[in-house]
Image 1 (cartoon, rainbow, N blue to C red):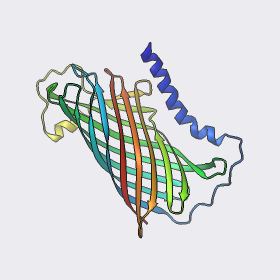
Image 2 (spheres, helix red, strand yellow; image 1 turned 90 degrees about the horizontal axis):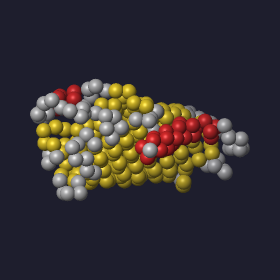
Image 3 (cartoon, rainbow, N blue to C red; image 1 turned 120 degrees about the vertical axis):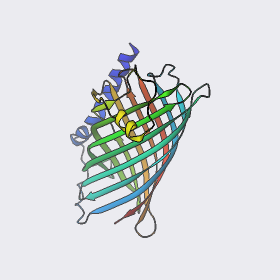
Length: 277
């Protein structure tokens, strides 16, 4: 019963995120007129470094204790603003050193690639000082974990190709500083998970083998089976010349129920140094 309630609640959250841009655009309250689109394009290329806390509970393990520990990672991010339209591309990586309640160690390697497109749809707020960007994203992500004390013969993974809505609220807080709050959540995904029974003793340690295994037998999931919510808040300000610095916080939660439950939660702080032209 609790699982049913959690599913209904999760579906409601995702649908609320998806309907938010439509609800805001349909509001009757007066707003400030849209600014004219900039005549020139703006492009930004940056390197992000993050430090955080990572937790995973994978029920495909024989003893599915929660593993948690330090997360370090980064990403290479590109953004292009042309008028009211914004494109973004991000290639990310990460490493988490984990242990369970009994001190048994494990580790996880994370990779991801995401493309995002959004449009500035309207101004919101009492004074129209917030801009709402709404659009969508397409992403690939893979979390590969090794539990040497629990199951040294195999590795575990959760890989997905997903798509869904993305919204960003932003405003200029002072001269040269921009605040952003963003949220992404897929409506559907293709997901690969390890089978519950493996009729072989050892996984190979070759990279080509790992890549093939973690992306095989991908199956279609809807939001009642696969949830992945990614939220971010940041403050960007200009440095000398064309350089830009961004400080922020990121929260990510993933829940997949097939063949059995796996949950991943991470939160981290990050710094991004970018060149803008």
